[in-house]
Image (tube, rainbow, N blue to C red; front, side, top):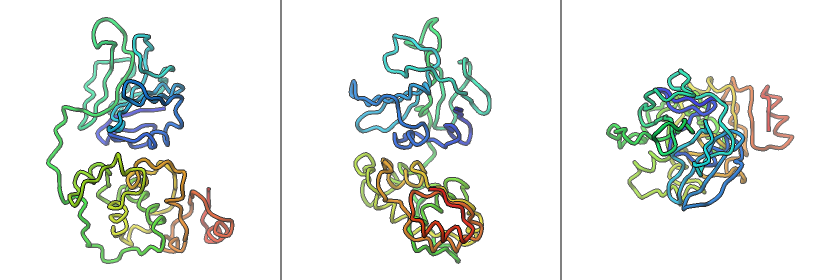
Amino acid sequence: MKIELNDQGIWLDGHSLTFPTTVPYLKSILGEPSREYWEDNQWRIAWDDLGIYTDYGVIDNVINLYFLHHPQEEVKYRSHGRYEGDIYLNGVSIKGTEDFDGKIGPWELRALRYLGEGETPIYSYLLGKNYSYVAPKKNKNKYAIKNQVKNSLVFSDFNFKLAVIEELMYVQEVLKPKVDVYEFADLYKKRRIDIDEEGYEPIPELVAYFKALPLDKKWASLVTEIDQDGGNEIYMTICPFWDGEDDAFTIESFSDVDQFPNLKKMTLFSTDEAIVQALQDKGIAIIS
């Protein structure tokens, strides 16, 4: 496993990460945790085999990850196993050291000692929010949809459109701005969007936003692959705490594939044999 903080953001084994983040998103990257329990007014979660630990309260989502470097019995909350992967800061390995400036924009990477002082060894590395960061003035109109697309794609299946948005917005990053659910909620003024309360179901305003968002036909040729995964950023944006156990984002109609001449592979949540055969006849490999 490789953890990196650089000018482009946080990367957890190649997956983009921001704080606060959600437990379902972490599980989609790290797998199911070894332990998940409530103690001292916090949820405690550990991936013991990976040496990774985090905690979060009733209201707050995850804002820190801890990577165990040197186990110390005095540290009550930690993973049982050590983190054996790599830790990089702007392309330079910092594991085993503490002489580095780990603040980059809104994020911070730092070494921790027990009680923070003395000769005790570094017991963990913390990756999380940089609380000294002063964010630039917010663009209140960042998510205002400007209908400047003359030739836009028309979709018959909204979930197919979401899968395309995942590819264009979050993977290839040609569709901008990249929507962040917490920033969207913060900028939305018609009502207060309470993500902690509402994030277990698709948030109506985000559904409406993506339904209205035009996709230029010129981008259709860029889509060569569609990969539906429970941890896709588009799903964590619309429904931050989605557990992937229902069919909320299952594609029902595949007529939209005809708009994507270079689409050659699709990983899908589920589909039937007839649809698989029909897509394969169009030269599209199907994984489900």
